[in-house]
Amino acid sequence: MLYLRMSSYDVRLTSVLSSMTVVAEQSETLEEVARRMRLNDIGSVLVTQDGSEEIAGILTERDVVRAIADGVDPATTLVSEYMTTDATTAEPTMTVTEAAKTMVGLGVRHLPVVANDQVVGMISLRDILIELIA
Amino acid sequence: MAHGWSDSSDRVLITGNLRVKGVPMQVEAVHRVLAVTATRDEPLVDVASRMRFNDVGSVVITDGRYVAGILTERDLIRAVAEGADLSAATVSEYMTPDPAVIRGDAEMLEAAGVMARIGVAHLPIVDDDGFVGVVSIRDVVLDITELVAR
Image 1 (cartoon, helix red, strand yellow):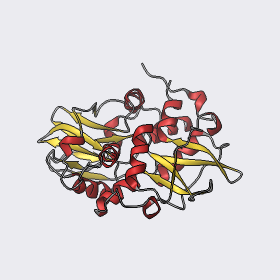
Image 2 (cartoon, chains in turn cyan, green; image 1 turned 180 degrees about the vertical axis):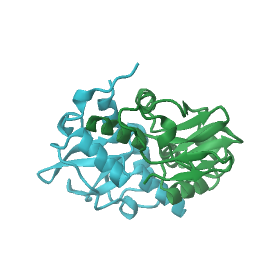
Image 3 (cartoon, chains in turn purple, green; image 1 turned 90 degrees about the horizontal axis):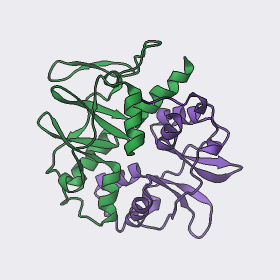
Image 4 (cartoon, chains in turn purple, orange; image 1 turned 90 degrees about the vertical axis):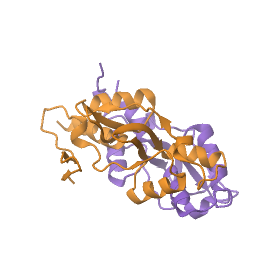
């Protein structure tokens, strides 16, 4: 029997976000990043400006599918061509419920969590689902 | 967002959250209408186009009325990671055969439990006549976060 963990609805993202974020550089190829996603079993990576830690965007599984649909060669196509640069972000003080509604409303499954202009982690719908059910 | 649709078998399917206050939501009432499907022998590039066009993260691989498999974004990532020729590689090489499914009369919370336990984001929905749709992690999380509003 499954139970909803009702006490979790007001849990702040700080305590559930994955702080181990996986990053890629804009000049890497989609194939290289796909290998990293597969190795880490994740659906999105943060994209940094080449040679710096500044965040340039996010690349998700959906972006890679878009590239495949376009018929481009993932071995030569760069992350910069398919990443999302204006990704919506979450704040660590948001509750899991608020974050879930934001993701569902936007049709995305991942949000970078940002505090003081710094990415402090990523939150996925999967993380939230696991938090919500006991 | 809620709207009805008749499919080829004249079954009226309803999307949108039609929760009646206090009544547990059944999977069938919120699932995706006109779920996106493919067959085993299609090239991955064609399926990727279909996923993009429909803005979905998975396609159900059907064999007649039956669910033969599911192909998700993650499977396509695996194909890219392996350097597969995406216009030659077919669905059968990368799909998950005989995936976990859920019955349409199951409650959403049961779907949530299956997804969390086996780590998937999509479950094909079946009834006695075979495949009828898909429930996604988005449907499930939306449904269970709305429970708190009661």
